[in-house]
Length: 605
Image 1 (tube, rainbow, N blue to C red):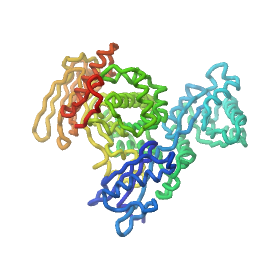
Image 2: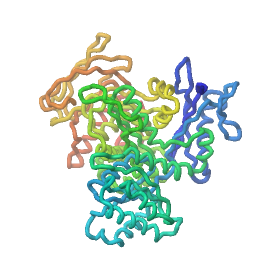
Image 3: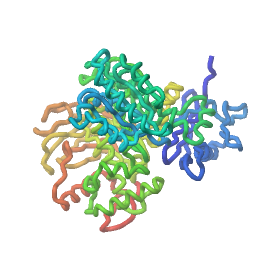
């Protein structure tokens, strides 16, 4: 029988920063004890991720007063009789660069759509292009395929198409086209080819690629018109990423020796956490993890629309969207190829030059660990974060039907290190534009990405940390939709707290109101919207009564309407953004200055 682990060390080795946290059993429960941070040291001049892990762990050693690592930099495991070291070590990572992937299939509407859905949930893969035989008449020419593949220069090619037992010849043509591309390349430059099409052609594919590079045969991503193997294909390709990229990160082999297993991709662990929270508490949960190199959105539906618990699912199923081409740090240049400066500028309280925005962001990509030195830089970074989350969320909604979310979780330093918690809440509202009654939470310890892997390793430890320490509850959001004229009455609400106190408020349209309600108080919230306003019940003008709990901010009421509307005239738009900032920021932290007033950064409350 395995000995109980009373002390655990968890580490997230990111592309820019490494976070290490100590979790220990205290009075019968696992608690988050301490945390340390360091630059990730996978690149020059260190070329060894263990240096960053040890540096972060040394900070914990100073806090708890005991050694976790030996003087030679090796982990003390298991814990000694004198209390030094830890019993277990869990590691997740996003430090390795993604594999450039090309998707090829028979048809756009069926084959490529399934392939896109599979690759969207794969951590560590960046889709650079996709082709189908029905692209047009010119794609019947092999030279067109060869030119397109040479231009994409993929590290991985995924071949999809054909239901099991379906048409053979078109799929064979596709296989031979990719094999021809490999034949023209030197052996060292040939991409890894994954075949996830008609299973009856697997042997033919193996013969076609014999001596022409490595071929991995996987289950058909779409075995029948009604069935998809999205999650199975995604996990198979992710295993290749862990083998070919993640474990080749300098120092990762040594980390694997400390843990006894291969590091888990951070995005997959984050998705497992969202699944775990949603399943445990029967909630509809969506989480954002915005990082320097990639952005992840994960969701789980733990209840049906009528409030009943959702049917049991395979625990491996995680609704996950990973955009390895969208980041707010070193990967900013890739994000700027999809997000225009005009989209970023619309979130500014002052008019700003597009070239200035580009200059600030490109400088940030060179120094991703830096912090904003001026107010304009802060607004630029947060505006980019909004757009990155909006693009990722739009891609995620293609794979999951929209639902009323019970919990929205934000993770990543761009969200957790804002001037005030209310400002972080504003970033989440602007990105997701939720409707109805939702709880907001932040991963203030930046350990959410490790908890999914921890839940697989030690479920009790993960449960205790999620329950008591992991998240900061910001409060309960009430967001409305419908036609709302700014300034007109939009919503009346009444909170009857369980301690007997009562709060009544009238909120006008186009505003954000914060109604204080401490985390230790709860009550019944009655919502009475105006005739054309919906509070999430699906019918305008219909009242609702819900149970609510307080939080750091209390109750947030957002009556700006959905979708958010931006005036065409620049001055009116800037005035609207300034009004939102004034609504959301607590009075004691309103040292905010626009670029016309000051260059100083927002001070936290």
